[in-house]
Length: 273
Image 1 (cartoon, rainbow, N blue to C red):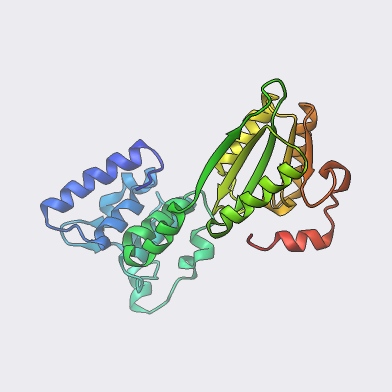
Image 2: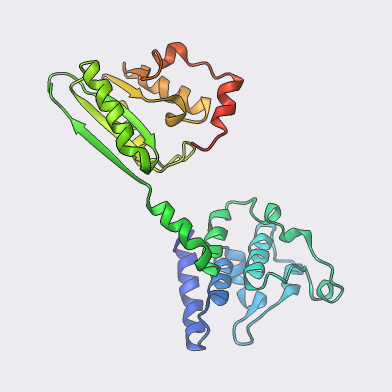
């Protein structure tokens, strides 16, 4: 379970202890308490928002003066996880069946707490999000070092590919190295990652090796496997140039000489490779 900070975690554990004593530990309680624990304001006014003993939420808490624009998002998200039918901003609105538009995802998720709202959803609906979590765990990275000539800097090769074609791609790269008589290599592989994911571990190792001038050149299969945004590629190419490292595409000439981010390329980048 992910927490935004230690205060979030400690408050959540404290409230869960209260709930366990009352025998209230199902996903309804857990997801609501987790979400209300995210924000300092909702932590401070937790008892005004939710009555643990009565198992009741207080819709009128939305109208309180201590609410901020962000704490309102947290409160509404918690209410939505507790009962998706509670899309009202007061008890009076509930009586008049006046549904609030502020419960829409576009209203709630436009804040920095969005990743933790998703965590709350996973807590509330574990049976539906389990498959996504398994898929995420199938992502992995590895670095393969093969040095034959210790006197020469190795060639760095970056690969981002799906799990199913990992070995086919690696074979393609190995064949290219033999044809071009490239003997010393470091292969940086990110398997199962999206091109827009900034946390690709092998890519981060590659960047560190570039900064350390550990490589003589960087090869990659195709542009979209490296980056999806022109600004990211330009920064990467500048970093290589700064450290006197050539950057080349195996399906093209030197990238810094041939890359043209035209409209057609940007259309291709919109796809989820």
